Amino acid sequence: MPVIRCPNKIGQRWFVETTCERCKKRWIQRFDHWNKIEKEKRKHLCRNCVAKKYDENKVKQLNETEKAYIAGMVDADGHITMGTKKQPQIGITNSCKRMLDWISEIIGHGKIEHKGYNEKTQKTTYVWRLCGMASIKCLLEQISPYLKIKKDKAKKVIQYASSQMQIGKI
Image (cartoon, rainbow, N blue to C red; front, side):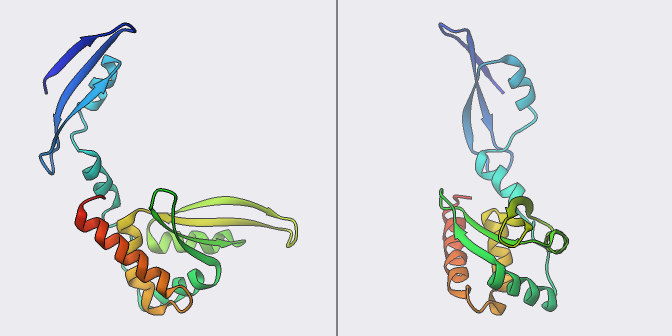
């Protein structure tokens, strides 16, 4: 890994040429501190490969009952949206944290956040969210036969995720 030192008005900058272990893509990284270079020497994956590494095989295979139950929860209390940066997202909002913990455990992925306290119902609400293009595509492909209300939105997200995966954007 060649290191090039380039002084500037503020201090020293280092430019490091790196090659991805997976796709063999080459790129140059800029560092302001030498200790950051030492930490980065262990990481030899480009951004696309890192995203794929963390996104692969996150969603477990569900049995038919689990697929139907999760599809019902997404239809009733959930959402399927495209985020601000064209990133799809699935979420379920509920006041029963145990149920969201169960869903997170069954799927094997996702994050539960405290949404807030609802004055009207006097209950604390939580949100389970699943992010990541491959994870969402995998889950939607499993539960889409059981979706009734949000089936069209799920198909659009699956098509979008498939097209992005073919382009190689994730």
